[in-house]
Image (tube, rainbow, N blue to C red; front, side):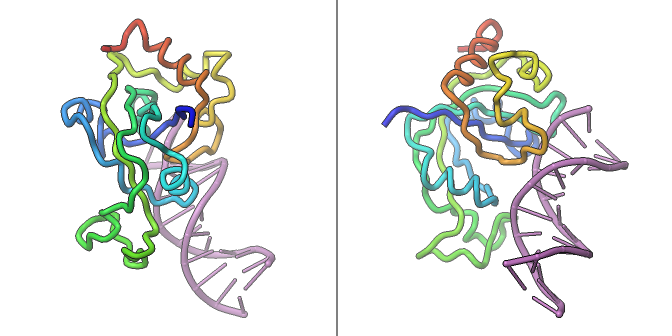
Length: 158
DNA sequence: GCCAACGTTGGC
DNA sequence: GCCAACGTTGGC
């Protein structure tokens, strides 16, 4: 199976690329949208690469990259009553929500902002640039991933 | 903080 | 199963 490419959104107050760099790996949990859930459960595999995108930020944009190190498994926070992501309708024997684990790969010294992404002709089709696009886990093409990496290339810590 | 766009809920 | 009301996301 060929490696696939994804974009994961997160608000920097919730989890930042700096945290990921420090943590090394993390559980990517709390996704509560069915379409995004389906990607995590069915399609995100070990070895896939991820653009870590910070939303609701100044600026919003790609902050770094990560590699998937554990494929979809039941989101433990859905079973934790104290978690804001607790869902009492989710059952351990048939979990509603899924998580994956990712490992830090690179951090951009400068966030590749939405405006900068929009300025790239070869990125015109990127889902994240589409108006009204709210998915927190979405596929990107290999070409898009590599184009963003190239943009970050001059400014990204390796 | 505003508000457009979208997803979910629930009455019927 | 329709659709209005409501909640959330996220750029600006």
